[in-house]
Image 1 (cartoon, rainbow over the protein chains, first blue to last red):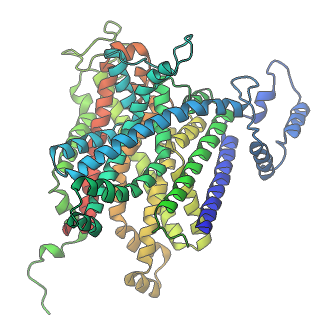
Image 2: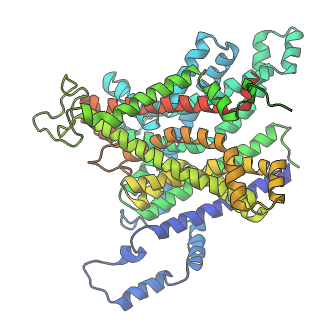
Image 3: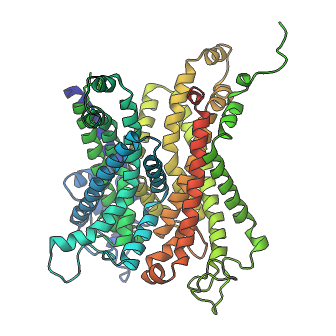
Length: 319
Length: 293
C-alpha cells in the first residue's frame, strides 16, 4: 500500500511541476512585454533605463533561470501582482474566491450524487421499465446540453417566470449576512450545476449495478432467502459503488468547467468569474495564478480519489 | 480448391458488417436523418430565405416570431432565422475543421508514442495525462486569452485541446497491433515506418477514428458555443450559435426577447443530440462483441 501511495504522490508532484512549466510558458507566449506594467506611458524612457528595469526583474536571464526564479517565488506564495487592479497581489485575490467556488461545487456534487445514485439504482432494478427509459432520456439530455444553456434556461424558468429564486449573486447586497439568504442564492445554481454530473453518475451506477446483479454472490444471497431490498442495498449497491466513486473523482475537472459557466451566468463570486473577468481584461498574472491554483486542486483531488479507491478496493494491485 | 460461389454474410469485411449493424439501429438512423435535415437547411438557406444574416432593419427591432420573420428579429433588426442558419455554418465549420486537425495530431502522436522507446512514450503519455486531468474549459480559456477571438484562433484552440484522448486510444491499438503476426511479417520483409503506419496501422484504427470524429464534432460544437458564449470565440458581427446565446447574458434579452436565445439553444441541443446518437450507433456498430449479444 505505501509504495503505491508514494508512487502516486510522485506522479502528482511531477504533474504539478509540468503544470507550472505550462503556465510559465503560456505566460511568456502572451502578447505584450512583461515590463509594460512597470512603465509609465507618460514619461519617456531611454533604452538604458528599460534595460535596467529588465535586469532588476531578472528578465535578461535565460528562460530556464527565469522559470526557476518564478517557481521559487510561486512556491512561497508570490504569484505576482494583478495588472488590472493596481498593486493587488494575485494570491490573496485568488484565495478569497476559492470559498464560494468550493461551496457551489460541493453543493452541486452532493445533489448530483444523491440524485444520480438514487436514479441509477431505480433504473437498474426496474430495467427497461418506463421509469428506466424515462431516466435514460433525461440523462441523455442532461449530458448533451451544455452547462451555460441549462444555466440560462434554469435562470429564465425559475427566476424570471416563476420568481422562486434570486437571479444572481451570492448574498443580497446591503442585507445582513444570514444562512437563509445564502441558501436561497445557492439552491438554483447548485441544482443546475448538478444536472450534467447527476446524469453521468446515473448512467455509471446503472451499468455497474446491472453487472453486479449478475454476480454469483448476489445469486447466493437471494438463494439464502435474503429479502430483495437487502440483496440490492447491502450486497449489490455497495459493490457497484466502487467504480462510481472513481468516476466522481475523475470528473471533478468537468465539474470545474461547468462551475465556470454557472458562475458567469449567476454572477457567483468564485474562481470561475475571476478567471473569466481576468481573461476579458487580459490580466495575465491573475489568469496564470487562477489556472495554477485550480489545476493544483484538481490534481490533489484526483490523487486523493486514487488513494481512497485503493484503500477501499482490496483487488487493486498495490505491489 | 474452388472459390465459393457466394460469399456468406459473415465473410463480408468488418466495415460492411459494421454498416449492416448501424442501419438496424433506429435511434442512430433518427439522429442521422435529423442531422442531414439540419445540414441541408444550413447549406441551402440563402436560396430560399428572404433575409441575410447581417441585414439591419431599423423598423423591426426585437420583433417576435411572425410570418415574415419566423424566429423574430434581434436588437438591431437582424433576422434571427438567417443568423441561426449562418451561425450553424460557422459552428459546423469550426467543429469539422478542428476535428480534422485533431484527428491528424492525435493519430500521429499516438503512432509516434507506440513505436518509440520507453522514455519518449512515457513523456508523451504523462503530457496526455496532464491534458486530460486539467479541466478542459480552463485550458480553453487560457489558450483563448492568448490567441484572441475569430474563426481561425477558435479552431486552433479547440484542435489543440482535443487530440490527447485520441492519441491515447490510437497508442493502445497500435501497441497491440505491433505484436500481431502480419505486422511482424511485414517488418521482417523490410517494411518501413511509413508503410507500417499507413498500410497496417491506419486501416486497423479506422473504427477508433470514425467514432472519435463523430462524437468529437458534437463536443467541438459545444466547446465553440461555450467559448463564444463567454465572448472569447467567434466575435460579432459574425454569427455563431454561441455568440447568439451570449446575447442572453443581458437581462432584457433573457427576460423579454426569449426567441433571440431559445432558438439558437434549441438548434445547439438538437444538433448535438443527433450527432451523439449517430456516434453511439457507430460505436456499437464497430464493437465486434455486439454480434454476440
